[in-house]
Amino acid sequence: MEDIIDVLSEKITKNLLKDSKLKLDPSEPLISTGLLDSFNLVDLALIVEEEFGVRIEDFELNADTFDTLEDLAQIIAERQ
Image (cartoon, rainbow, N blue to C red):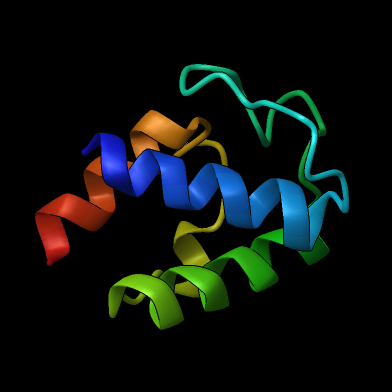
C-alpha cells in the first residue's frame, strides 16, 4: 500500500497543488482541512482511474468516504 500512497502523494502535490516540493503525510486530512477542494477531487478521481484502473464514483468524492492518502489507498487496494 506504500507504493499507492507514494504515487498518490506525488500526483496530488505535482498536478493538483502545483508544489512538487510539498510532502504529504499519509494520515494528513486532505478534504476536511481544505487542502483539496471540490474541483481537485474530480481531478483526483481521474488520476486514480488512470494510474490504478480504479473508479471512484462522484458520490464518494468527500471526506466521509476518504480524507487521507491512507484512506484513499485502502479503497484503491480493495478495488484492484
